[in-house]
Image (cartoon, rainbow, N blue to C red; front, side, top):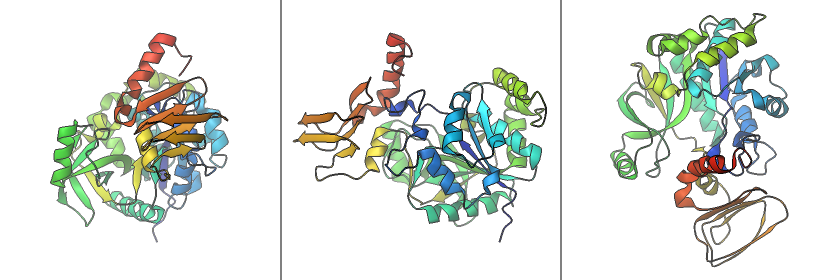
Length: 359
């Protein structure tokens, strides 16, 4: 059996989740919400899923400093020194660069899985095998490995990976990345069988990712290279690094530039719970294909809807089809599921019109 003591996990949990507005709010983003009534938030489910694969003391959570208490409350067993608090939002590349430097300082020979905190995995045994296979690969290759999901529909909200030549049964070289294609291109991708959804889950060794940052995004590497976690002024170093760092995703900063990028094609029942439709697809439905999230609904001649209403309010609808009805108390959203990609713009419009009041 492989020695797990040098295996680490970085859970990224600092996002706002604006596509889940109005349930996901600035003060309580979606990763901290128990959407399925299981008593565990998406963040807690992610932590639970990683525990069989990585020692608990090697799990690191990176979040915005405003969510420090939420993370500590939901993950009480995590080492407080392993909760990294970002002083500003700078997207995933700075987040990963900082966490990598933090790990390098204590274990330069580490291998790492980096995962978002808001994914749904339905077949956890298959997930464990896929991650174990991924760890074995990056521990024996100079490789940046991403997990690719077989697409089931021409989704325009995900990035796509085109596969190249095979290295093992389920690991291939990456040929191209494409960010969120239009509907026609997504249909072409689906028809070829060569394209997989980019899950946003990565594995690599600390040596490989550190070298990649140095060669491909030296401006980011420079921000974190000299940081010393044991130093008395470590927090000041962090603040300075983030103030100087550009806001950019790991895909743009590293993955799309690197020559040593591979994809492991996986089938463990993945869903990026980034949208109301994704929650609808993964929730139990009644005989009219409606989903009710812990609320009271009388629906007449209505189907394909998701109702998420807090409190004791009764929702009564007639002749409604394929809609999102989400009531967070001070905000009511009524939107066709087909238009949910526009919710981010709605949030921006609300900010322009009303400031931070409804965010």
